Image (cartoon, rainbow, N blue to C red):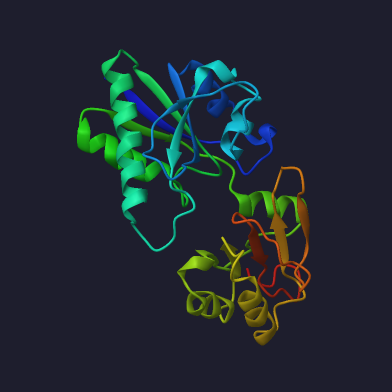
Length: 254
């Protein structure tokens, strides 16, 4: 039975991969990495050692030789739900996996930034592969998420005692973010690049701007970790906003 494993490779720092993640990547018959598709029909492409690499690929290259990698184009920049281009990319990627299995591969690893079960492309790929080959076993190896890395780097505990932790994408709308800020716990917003001014306004409205922390390009060149302010106008898509719960004394939420 062939196995397709989604491997979480963390937000950017190659040292954040787990021992299991490195082992699974190195033992796989084929390691697949997502890349941005152009406007042409998506097809899998081989990886040249000197070619520009996506974030997941750059992380994986610290542990696996480039000639063992294969790129799968996805419509990562599409917005507006399941577009025709996005669905076509999912289907094409699934076919590549099935073709590799039919050619004899029994262990395939798909490297995904962060964790494969948290806002990951891997889930869509796995669904497509299962539809074509129901017998394929699907597994995941958890990875360090951006919110964990930002919490560690900024010295900000994510949750204490009875505090809830809310993780949401800013693309889901401002209402969900506002409702979370009105609650008692920590709020983390992903993908806030285009909505940063609106998020900033909500932080001010709820009196939670002072303690908020913004992380951009975590583990990559150009990384920035610090307070949230009006000066950030060029946030990357994968920016992370961490708003810690209000805490007035040690152990106050026990």
